Length: 162
Image 1 (spheres, one colour):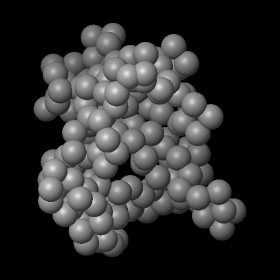
Image 2 (tube, one colour):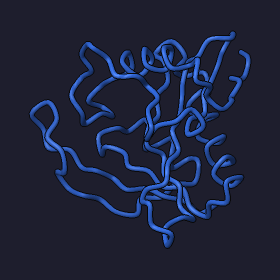
Image 3 (cartoon, rainbow, N blue to C red):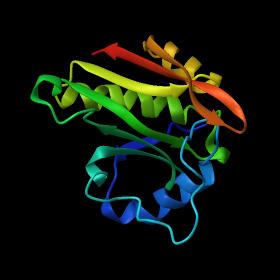
Image 4 (cartoon, rainbow, N blue to C red):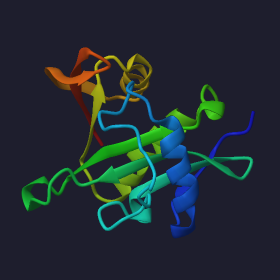
């Protein structure tokens, strides 16, 4: 099984990434309503191509991870946050998610970040397991922060030093 190719996103990836994000939508990891037409572009002024790493298998986009500054404050400029992450259903279990997380860590280091943070829903056991295995630790929990599918779900804050 070949390793995924990880690269920075390009403007031309917009359509594929938009379709991937819609197909991957689930209350396992999303708190926003399911996307409905007309669909907004994947890239916009807040989410630029160079904020995204893309995973490809056999020349097809099968995943992405978005890095962003959590705040515009200069005192927080040493921190980057994962603010979007998806892997196509057909590519799960092939190391794509792990490759994206590792590439995000290296990209954050390369951009001068000293910390990488993220938020994950408490019931998303596969993602939490992946993050913990890649050095992220739980740094806080907001109990019952979201109500999804009739259940209250924790918002788990995780981070790691770079």
